[in-house]
Image 1 (cartoon, each protein chain N blue to C red):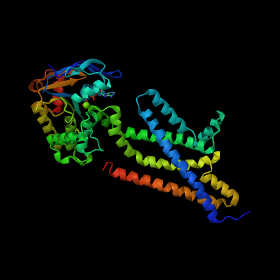
Image 2: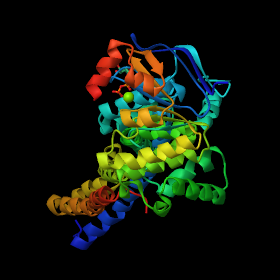
Image 3: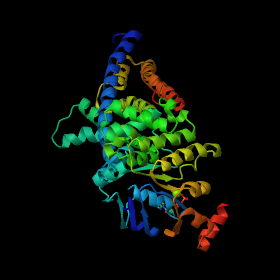
Length: 242
Length: 219
Ligand SMILES: Nc1ncnc2c1ncn2[C@@H]1O[C@H](COP(=O)(O)OP(=O)(O)OP(=O)(O)O)[C@@H](O)[C@H]1O
Ligand SMILES: [Mg+2]
């Protein structure tokens, strides 16, 4: 059984068709890297899966439940699927600990003490237990992104969507975030990540999706996609990256 | 003609200044309450509500406060409602303040980064939860200096109500001048009192702005 089923998904912005019929099935525990040129629709696809954009055609289902654009269904979906953004998007007026506690208390109505315990546990998991009381602007980019991961994990999602989560980081901070992601992958978390880190995609991911002009142009295990690109577009893309 | 001492002049002006202060407070507080309601309509989901508030703000920002005072004072009279000057003054100033405050606050809410909406959405929060816990706390911090700054405009705006006959500081200035024939002294004092009311407000707005810029966090 697939955990996430994306079927014939189309998305238009005005008359610009950004997704032109996407089909991807993600099995539980799979780690999928989405690569492709700027503007190929990678972010849009992730945003559709999380309901931040509504789709025009096709269907998306997560753990058997259809994605429908009403508040109740969206909320149910978002409890199952967490999202990490390129720009961290921590709440700047709250400490790291409060950032992780807020949605538990507000959305799940978790009692404060319990939410606090969970926040401590999750911050520890990303190696930031000692930063519980720090405000986001007192943290480095890498630390902020790890808090964002802890915040998503605290909702106990069954899958995480990561949109270029290391692209805004200084090079020396990339690894501390990637190693957290790697850890999650090894614990069996289902991950869909848009990334430019080809090494990481090769080492950690079970499948790589190459998107081109709103379509899944190639899909397969990293060995195959990276070593034997079948299409000239992917060859060119990998050539540019290397 | 009796002789007025400087103290007599000042005393009469200070007594009238109480009404300036009271009218300012009523206008500002009333305007804030109406402004909050308008703000929610302005940034809410209903298209009709948004259009209404947009038009409301444009009308009040696009016409002189003096005309608004006249229209409230004489306009309500047309409906057979006999409005005392204080009521017309209060009502017009409340509606006028609300328009400006709504617009100031809308800017503050929209200054909160789009990513804050997306992150809180992705965590499963609904619209009101996002507003309450994520957006408004951040917008509020940005809103404090311009809001305090606007209160200065309210104080100065009350001066116009003298024209429809409300006896506040400016009106008292005119009346005392008519009795004393010392316009320069009288209006000098009037200006001084306005300054004493307004200066602390604009100064604190500046200080708040600097403070909140340095540490825009909640400690
Ligand atoms: N809100 C929007 N309104 C209009 N057009 C949009 C919107 N969001 C994305 N697009 C368009 O959709 C196309 C795909 O954008 P998307 O952000 O998904 O690309 P991407 O593959 O993530 O690119 P990048 O690598 O630069 O992040 C682009 O042409 C973009 O201009
Ligand atoms: Mg993108």
